[in-house]
Image (cartoon, rainbow, N blue to C red; front, side, top):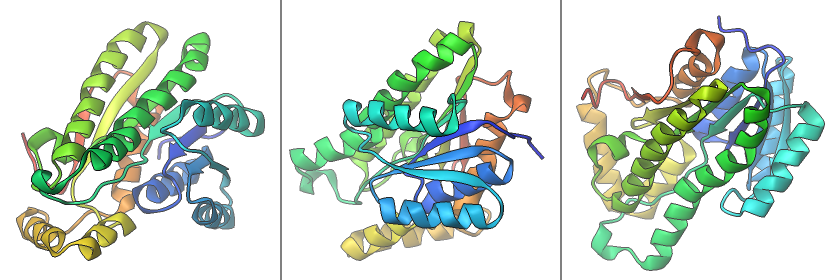
Length: 254
């Protein structure tokens, strides 16, 4: 068991899917959770479920692609839960579409949520972490960034940027005893995946092929990612920084 008692964690996109799994597992280890999401009603539902097992959580509405919204969110979390110890950049969005069929508006949305959002939250939170000489930043990437993924060219690029940014930030913040790492989920059962399947039959074909290719013979579940986050957020991972961990059932092994 990794003890995170009294630690304050921000989880972006924490209302559902992988973010909900991360928030729940962190709360079970004693962390105080700020679930940051545009889907505020779903966030409140997740907060209620965490409180049902004795955990502590709040829901905060924010648009991570807008830095002023992030600044307001961080101030709210600090006021209600105290100094921020853990930042988990989980919020993400995509559609599985061949690149030739995408548009610049689509590129902008994917980059704004998946990459710019990470820049904004890290930029706002890290100043406080630097002043305290402690902190854990865990950015959720994707195995699509590591090996490519059919129909996810822009998303793969944005998540690749997250990996490169995280490695550089890990070097810059090491002197302040702030750890920065990346977790790359493989195919995982989430509402977003179901939405992508319904959006286009092309996505359904892609996910069906992935299912058969995973050595452990199943898709991940959000809690699989949550357990990895808890480890990297814990004191047991104090000597780990600038690393990329795949949680993919063996789909990628390089």
